[in-house]
Amino acid sequence: MSTSILDEDTIIEYSTDPELIHEKYKDLVDIVINGGYGFNVASTIVDCTDENDLKIIREGKGKIELVY
Image (cartoon, rainbow, N blue to C red; front, side, top):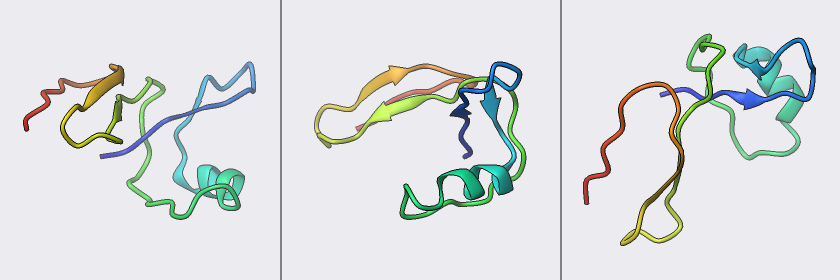
């Protein structure tokens, strides 16, 4: 699993270099896991705040199936 981060830079739509992501967001998040380079495609975002009602917020690259 990996992620993409929307970047405000108009040249780079999504940051996919784990080292750059860590440098930019290390003071804003608890953990950054280096999963290697990603693709310049949005990742899927799933709201897991309610374990009985998972919601796909944004569907990105890849197929996703919510299984309870």
